[in-house]
Image (cartoon, rainbow, N blue to C red; front, side, top):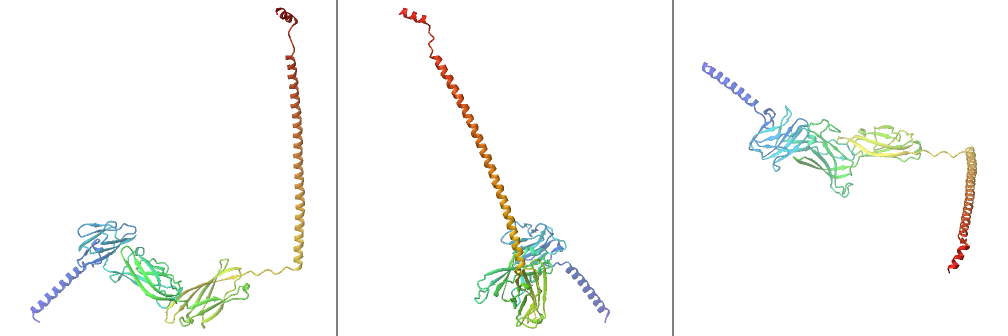
Length: 444
């Protein structure tokens, strides 16, 4: 190779290295269209975006962000164009959908969590696990659902409080089914709070908590995820089948002994007998719980003796079943509760000695009662006589005093009458002298 050729190769190699270095530096400064944290909450929207949704992670309890548009105008949670913007605020974030956004640089003002990313998605959908078949009454079922942004799982702290997931069963109204005319029933929800069957909070996976204690028959599952920003729906037809395990207590001729027998019938065309286990709890009237475990089924119908109970009263038998279907699906079933009573036996009839003793005791009691009644009667009679005597004495004394008062009054009246008569007689005496009489005659 000539020296000129070697020099040209070296120059070309140096050019490639410089080009790659510049390209790497340029690429390192590029921020993906759906990430804006490295640009101090700034991002750019190109002219081809028809609609987008912003998922913003704020400090807990902080106020909603303020959106600054490319022309400098601002949008607030309570002041924005209602026809173009829908805004959902939560304790830890915002979910904002914008129709036909203005192309250019945008900015967010607020307490956005440092190091978080502002997700910009164009399409929001939901993904829901399908209901397995067969599905049985009373089954504990774990289904999951996810909110997808541009086909990627959306994970945002506090998203559980910003989304409302509702699950409904809609009856197909088949006349031969038990759920005929049952209508629409809300059977549960999906939560991402780390409780019940949900494994981890705020991981973007919402877990179901469905009540399958419903009439059997054909249904349509309707899962609805909604808030003020979006509303998505998932539907699936399925059949809710009857429990493949039936349990009942066999009648007993000696209910006073506390011994009961449990009859278990398993549908071996649905479940594997050798992989079926029952766990039960007997709750007694005193609150005591007796655990019962039943396994090793070899026949489709079997009987098992329950532990003897000794406390008189009502008992509640709660049973759960774990099994495997013929197609290999593990299931957990809650079976209907059963009830029974341990009745206290009647006491034996008394013997002749006991009867005689009871009669003697009753006679003594009656005699004592008669004596007490006689004493009480005598006391009452004496009290009555005393009271009557006191009243008679009071009456006689009062009458005597009245007679004396009347006699005194009459005497006083007679005295006054005699006095008046004396005065009247004195007034009638003629006090004129004889001389006065003669003078009068002479003058005449």
